[in-house]
Length: 270
Image (cartoon, rainbow, N blue to C red; front, side, top):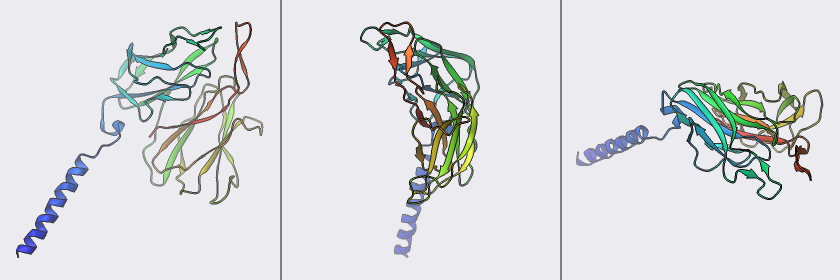
């Protein structure tokens, strides 16, 4: 009887510990916080200096945001919902490059004044060309509910000198290098626009998707292909980045340029 009592005591203690662990499990911020709006800012400006993000003139980021990076690096920044002004501001130094002749950027690169709703997700892509038009592309991230065996993907055309783009996808069989077939899952995506998330089958390790960007109406690849093992429940954004051709910044003698470096960059939204 004493032995039985001790066994049941041990089992009871373990069950309490397990229960406590479940209650104290750290979940993603966006899943446990309510009545907040969620914002991420992406630096998609080729040749850009590092940026800071201000919400109603209050800086919210820690480290500055380099080109093809974002804040936060994972998940979203939480703010009180309502009428907000989100600015992308040049971090010091205020010019780039720091050697003459400098490219004056000024202080504020983009401003998005809008109503941001509670429990919704938003991405702001800072896009454009140095010495020309720069703006913030504001997108509501309509992240789908989780579905068994499915991941989700979308495409944003943030390339400043690009034409409309097609976004191709194909599954690479185990042991192969290229997909057996490739299909445009997003077609004719205009510059400065985005597509909503669509469901794709989650893939087993060793059988990734291959994604490739092409100019609409051509078979010309833009940048290199990228492979991804799609995890069930995850939501992924690919955006086109860089210049498709070498860009000459207006107003400089001798000329200053930003090299062509087109491609795709991945963001994990969930």
